[in-house]
Image (cartoon, rainbow, N blue to C red; front, side, top):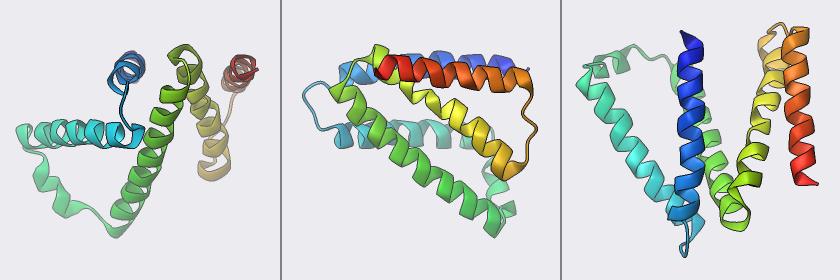
Length: 137
């Protein structure tokens, strides 16, 4: 079941790039990121309240808050740089290079989380890295 959600994530990420490229035309990319973030904020909290999951906030530990906060900072910085790249480059170049994050995440998961990297996963990561290099050059 996880792969269905992952494919849906990829589908919506693709639309994100296309819609963002159109949306940032003629405006500052940081302002565009802030506007996009506002919509995400409303949707995410809307889902939490609609599903009555907000009560779970009291169960969060300091560790949850710390790492979710750091993840939010990383996401925000990623979006700021992504929108700037989209403003300057083509979607067909920026979006695939942005997916280099997949290979970086695989490497970091092995180093920091001690996840086992299989030959299949390593081959996929190397193909992503190679593809990104090809697009950049």
